[in-house]
Length: 255
Image 1 (cartoon, rainbow, N blue to C red):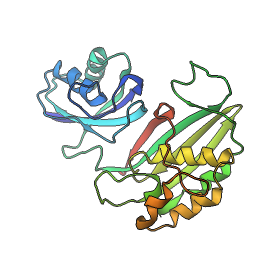
Image 2: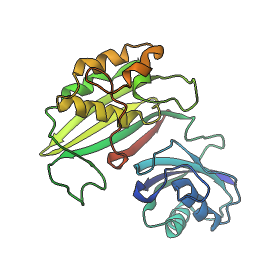
Image 3: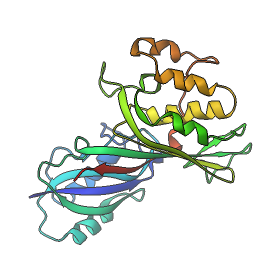
């Protein structure tokens, strides 16, 4: 019996999120089905983070205990044989017995993709948000986020009354032709934080929201957050960028 760590990639379009749910297709549920075919008798697979319905991953980390009498290459091949077409194991390794992909993580990195077009593009919209009117330069807005801030105006803690302070290690917008990509790395994220950050930056890039409003929202106390979520110019919208543009790219560990 050993604890194994794997890196998962998946197209989240047809999943109702990553966490197991009764009678719903989820990433955790499909991984556990594949493991059962390999003789796994555990109760749960551990994931590094929860992804929303429709959100993708190229670097989700999972861990499980398995009595496996063959090599890592054989386990890698066997898992991909039994996983559905929209999931794949990228890497497999033996982990420490106490390793937990969520609690041991030092940071996570997400990537959001969007493109500016007045006409729908079915091939791109599965993995990116089509934005119109077009945005102006988003690059300067990325400098707002790095540092340790209270992000209560931009997300919800995993537990009620939980801490909303997070440390963003890096944030960057990149632009190629009509496409924009937002990369952000932090020690942890609030629920739906990245999708709200993208939405408000797009609103600023379209001239619908002053960039100064985003800065002020980071300076607010948690008790004033309710007001910032009301719609209207000068306040933080409660809307979210679509899940289809978001990908969990990497989970890092200090070891």
